[in-house]
Length: 147
Image (tube, rainbow, N blue to C red; front, side, top):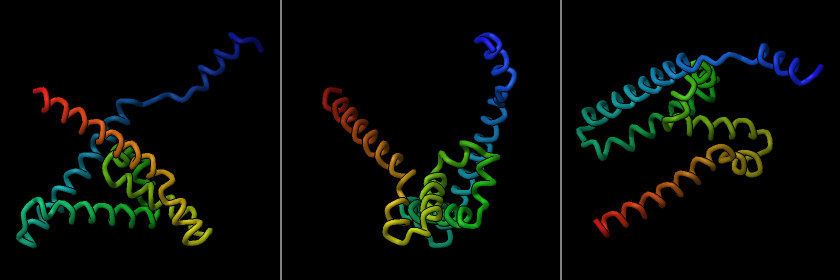
């Protein structure tokens, strides 16, 4: 088989991408997560009679808990297959990655398994989050200094 035949065969076997469909579902599911988060936020604000600043951490903790629970029950992965980026962009995706890593390594023990592998996927997010926020903080400081 020469190069041209190989390229033709590879082109016929290449999976077709459904970019618009995937983008639609990511937008839809990400939006639903956002609406649910807003609903939880409103619930905490009204039920506990607190302002948004105090209710926001409670809402975030609730979303992380639900995401970890769904991951432990094996339901989050099924949702993520349909939703795509709509589930791993919000904080729920971060909680899912940490819980999945912990569950995968639980047989190795608490310290060498769960403790050392929990941040395997989440560590990258944390690292780049800290670096980008520091960089943006410096840029904002320079702009306000000379602006």
